[in-house]
Length: 181
Image 1: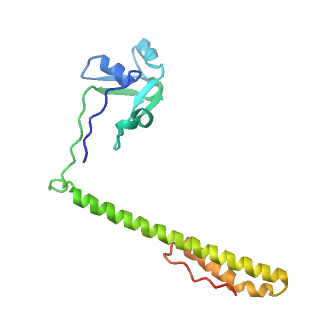
Image 2: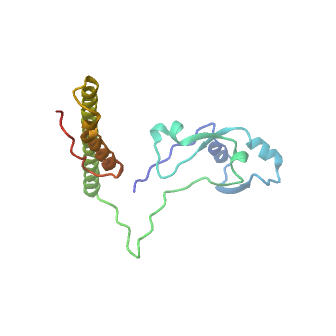
């Protein structure tokens, strides 16, 4: 788990406005407010920051702020001026194990190897399909030239069907492709 410090709120945000109220926490009904003047004042569009599992301070304005009218977006607003990172719950009475740098590196290496293998498989299937299509094209040219008949296309069509079936079923290996005659 990584804990990051959050930057101060953007000056044009609801978060900054709430912070300026200098209250540790409060509940603000927006849809059924007794203070319609306050609700109307909060209806002006401002920025709202959303921070979840991911927080990128370097791109915060683009990746974490969105334009909103508070009463039109939410029914109620619960404000806490100061919050902290959550602590993971222990699993089945055990303390949660934080992965070591070495374990994370190993997992990353394994995932990269898996991705490389998948990419190699896609490249191999793409090459096999390209070769099968080229073989079919050549056979069609031979039919057009009168030195082959449509019956001679069967092997190439079967090879393409096998490749299509292997690709749609997620098979790792492409079917063999006939060679150019």
